[in-house]
Length: 481
Ligand SMILES: [Zn+2]
Image (cartoon, rainbow, N blue to C red; front, side):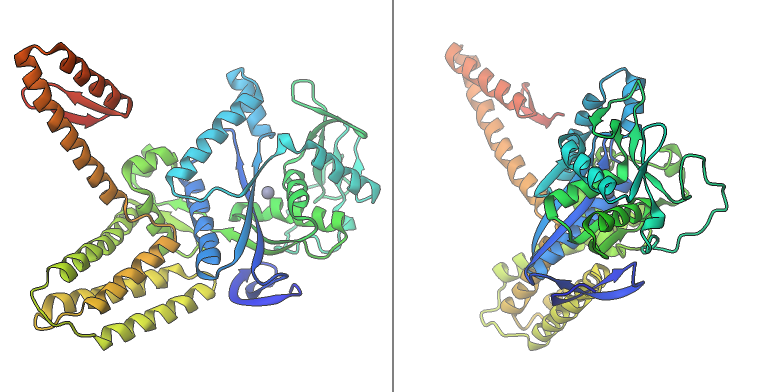
């Protein structure tokens, strides 16, 4: 357990194998590093699940528990897979990495995921990587092999395997390594791969060292949260922890490991035809970002999540329930024919109960699913009263409930408003097109060239904003890609 100030929030810790209190050095400031993508291909729904769930946790820490979270993400832009892709497509590995990184940020923005405050690319941090490995060499914790690679000596780190029990696979150790679990922090020079010159030889960094070096450059010898998918727990995070503790001479480098469960596909026709993966852009053609986020909120972040059409319809249905409730509240408070309002103390106390329960649920390893369920119960009760109790009028009570629901869902990163915004912009476009149609019809009759030219300018400008106007007797328009 770290020294410092408990903040009253509990999180599952894989080292302790139980929920532990979050303790921060400064009670209001926390540092967070997420392992980012290896940018060699389009991001898929599995990445969406991981980063949306991490975004939800970060938002809870910031928006519910008022922590100042300093967030960083590492982008792996030098790696075997990127080099392979570059060879296959006969392009430079940097071009491959840049293109897919750009796409990644667009996907993240479309999922309403907040961008990390600090973005570190391996290619920009080669001197930090070199210094880190040099430090390990100086302390004799790594060794150089005949092919110019550098390996971490796990026998020099007595608590290797602290994140999980490491099982001996029984496979014979290869000839190069001293111990079976040793891993490469540096890969020796190969003629057809990018390489960097260092004091111990030419080559390129291993994957695990990249994160350790970048985190240490940004946050120093200790870090509060280190996050990623559960598949990174071993060997990636285990190795990061080992080499970072060794480098900094500490027993604990990352205080809290946040691991997000896998997203699995239910065996359906759809998943088979899509080869068990869906790109994020494809996902967002089918469902809104809010719908996917709601599906994530309903599943525990640590558990595997099973992707299915039913799961997504449920997400959509719940988002709609909240939206309909908000619309109904609006109509209820603005259109009531009852002159005298009353407080509904039963509703107000159930709101208070839900607020308290939800705070407890979030303190307990970010239990978002029970928050959503208790809010659904709350709005269902309010709905019933609004519909059936026609002799009384409770504007204050229902508005407070609506306000709380919007506040919580917004804190979780739901947008809620996209369809309303779309509706408003659609009616603005309708108005403009109608006006243009009238002007143009008259201009055609009077053969007013100036006005007709002005109408053409409007048409072209709208086209550049992805709105295509079709001129005929009745002017119509469509959104185009
Ligand atoms: Zn990492």
